[in-house]
Length: 103
Length: 103
DNA sequence: CCAATGTGTCGGAGATAGTTGACATGTCGG
DNA sequence: CCGACATGTCAACTATCTCCGACACATTGG
Image 1: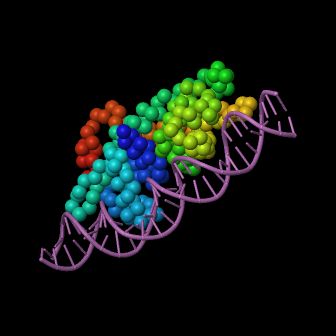
Image 2: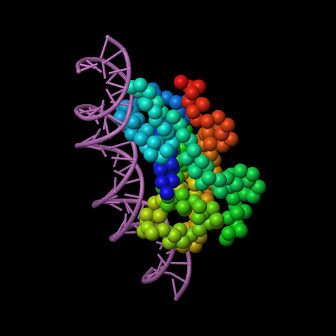
């Protein structure tokens, strides 16, 4: 049940941004590090957390390393979210009504 | 994008469980604490984090306190997630193809 | 009022996460 | 081979999280 890993990975803004960047296409590690006001090792650690959550895949390309998005684990987040959707979508009854019937 | 709070709130299993419980209907603080193998103050802290993320609302009922789910902020998570959906849904091109066109 | 009850908050201990500079590893060009 | 380069990993420090026991505060019932 490392499902915790995905939610944990999304808990940091740098990692969410990394995923957004990688959604546009694969990127070299150095390029990724330059996008942030952080040391290169710091970004590398964030990438490792994403790797542990299976959200990215890396590939050696010459002496560089290219990162790819593997978004499948995000489906787990969507699955978790789904039961809540009706609370804000197609909202026919007000929150007060729902609260009322549980009183 | 100030709402790091929602992603942070979802990063802990106890808090995710709390939201699921509250999705079934409002609950008294004491009831909620009993659901976990945790001290009452610990659960109270988790509830405070959920309150700061505007994911729950609390109401004084006699000498007890009743918590309600306010799921609207979860829409923000769904919005963030949405651009990634096509990566695992209706997957017509393989990952390798996408990688190829960015080489 | 006063004691009991239900809860939030505080202080501090222990664990974990985030960051950085220094170093190790592996790859390429000559 | 060798030096330059790209990058991961380590040690150590700091910040933040998680948790608990103790205490504070408000509400209720006698």
